[in-house]
Amino acid sequence: MNKEIDFETNLIISYGKFEIFLLDLKNYKNIYHEEFKFREDTENLDFNLLSEFLENNIFKIEKLAGNFVNNINVVIENKSILISNIAIKKKNYSGEVTNVILESMLTDIKDLFIESYNQHKLIHMVINKYKIDGVSYHSLQNEIINDEICLEVKLISIPNLILIQIERILKNFQIQVINYLEKNYVKNFFQDEELDISIKVNNLLNGLNKNEVKITTKSKKKQGFFEKFFQLFS
Image 1 (cartoon, one colour):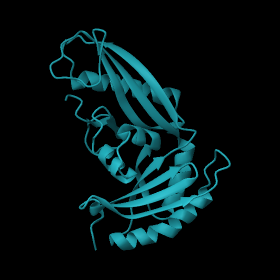
Image 2 (tube, one colour; image 1 turned 180 degrees about the vertical axis):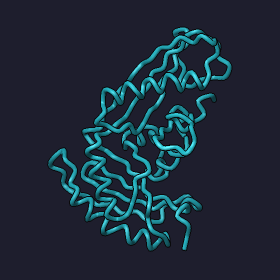
Image 3 (cartoon, helix red, strand yellow; image 1 turned 135 degrees about the horizontal axis):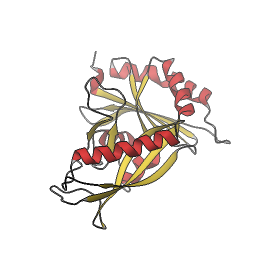
């Protein structure tokens, strides 16, 4: 039997269509792709159709992978997704802009968001701009010295209620969601590149967007809210 790490399963839930991919990580290509199109008359997701779609495909994927599907990435397109843009300014008494200062600022933004939108799950946190002395940067260079820094951050979240329903269905197949991604964010980051969405998802999850902060709520070590910064200092 193949090891599960050799494969990555991606479920795409979008307007009028479900898709599922099995990505072969060794050869970096999809060895399974199935889609189901349906007529969407309401803004509500039809969870019965989703359950049927998974029922028709999970066993086929497991047979190809030679292992059970235990984990899955879910990419969502939904009208209930909330996109927020927040700016924060902070005095920098040490003079040098460091990861410690950035993490403190991002934690403040995260806490403010959770306080204001506690019925949503934060799935993307992306630094759009760094502002230093009134000058905007899209990436932060090494050894910047300044006594004040401003961050402009995009937050993408989805209502917990939707995620609970998705996870309830997947639990019937003993599958756990390990990552949520927003479909338009994935699509817009790559713009015109003709790649399968499963390849795009894998690239983003492995840190292709240097300004996206990977968030974790569980950790065996005391590493704070953020697991790491994706090469914030380029």
